[in-house]
Image 1 (cartoon, rainbow, N blue to C red):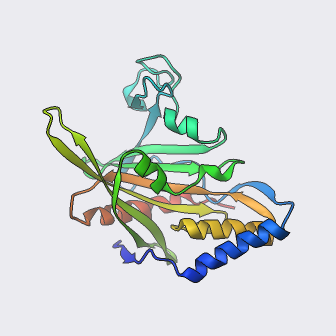
Image 2: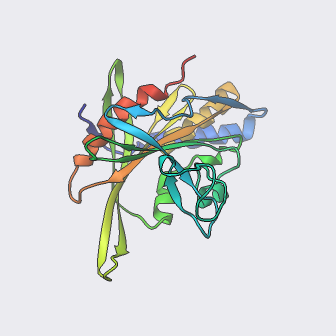
Image 3: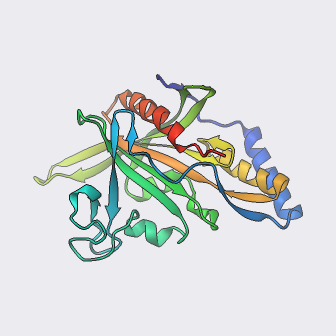
Length: 256
């Protein structure tokens, strides 16, 4: 399925509406109930089309900080380097995210070895601050965002396409021989709430405020992210994202 691109600029009227709803909620609305309901399942499938998923494990010790594929370890519960218990969050995520944040992640590879993809789901807990603009984390990790665009991915059996935000990134590093080099990558994501789906952080904030004001409830939101390497000055990765996301999406839907 071929994606189409769409301008990521949202009308000023929508931004004004978001602030209006938030302001109304702060002044007039009380007694908002937190809900455990989420719009997706917190589980990534073992297979997505031609991609097979491998579990990723991280050492929570800051001085160690190693990451592994579970299938490479004799004991997937303990870091073979320092003995710390392994989990699906690295030390930075454990220190920054609320304790009840849910996370699922896999490293997906194809039999031909092409286009490997890291896929992640982050699900907010009682503290809704688990979900934020990924741009904040990407730049903090040293990535330069060179381009961003909203793509629309056709989905089988659904009239409305899936909108995904794609960040093109570059990160400078030094080779072992001392020469400078650049690693070019992408980060693609969208947000999911209870009966809500958007690639816009502003729209997500609007719907959070709307549900608080109109329904008196604060649902758990999640974001689904995919990342991988890209070819400089090429848009070939957009088709890879579209192929993967269109097959991943049905597996994440929460049945009533």
